[in-house]
Length: 439
Image (cartoon, rainbow, N blue to C red; front, top):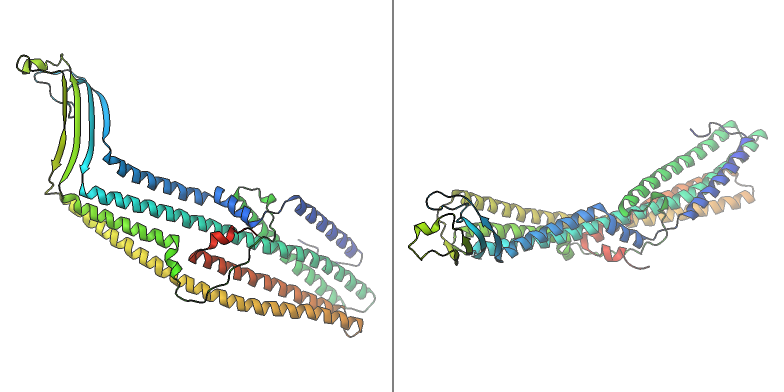
């Protein structure tokens, strides 16, 4: 709990404590070197877990594509098929018993493999686009947390000054109460004003600590080392058009389109599985004598070294499971297509909503700026009136309190404008180039 009561003797001590707190706060701030926004974004892109997961997904998709592509290269295997035989030597797992064998096989002509290869290439492209989208998500997360932390740091510095003024005001009111100028009610009001400032301070400190912890997890820095500076680039002007063609260039939309194309190619390949196929095959084997091959061949016709090379032609004509698989692939392709369309429609609506939000928040910011300007001028007017003895200490305190509240409101509106503009850049493109801009 904060102080429960104030008196004239304890107020000076409180002022000294506040001054010491300000000195300690300044010393701690001096120890932590401010980190510019660009460096924070660079660190987040290298360290963020989500970006690493997206990169792993891209590597997996690339490996799946290479697996299909390299299936056209003959696969070689060597070994031996040793075993005891009774009567004519039968095969062991499809190969004659032999001291040494060499096998090679690969698809030579498969209609469906071409489509499956194209589908894998499309999925690889989709994974790359999802990685780009996740990269922009990391940038957006870092930028918004940095901007918000900068807001709270500025507010906290101003509140520390206001707290010092509030302690001085309490001391003055206490003196006026002793002199019989003010009532005890005014002393209670002074304590309430200080309590409100302390409430804002605890709110700012708590929010700043949470944001620093989140940025620490994003960037790998220590939370105590994170301090912002005025390195946020100027936000670009928002275009007025409603239908933005840049929605189609959004990496998330492009990824969904590529995924839909991959599903369509898979379904197309499944339907081609009914067509004839040709496979290449080759086998070389050194047969043993203890299996008694020579007993089953004409004298002199047995060869220990044997080789076969050629092609295997298949004509599939009946496969109920394959037909069902093709139908399931058709359903998946239709689902992916509709999901891509829904994602584009949703993003288009989001862009329109963000544009209108930015316009509205900019208007609210203009109002907040004017209200803060009026509050500042009101303070100057109160000081003049105090010099002319037409206003008292309480009038000045009320004006300063009102100006402090207007400053907080202006900060909040400014952050909402920045949040909407950053989200809009994320949706329409340009966020990364803006965030990594050298100031």
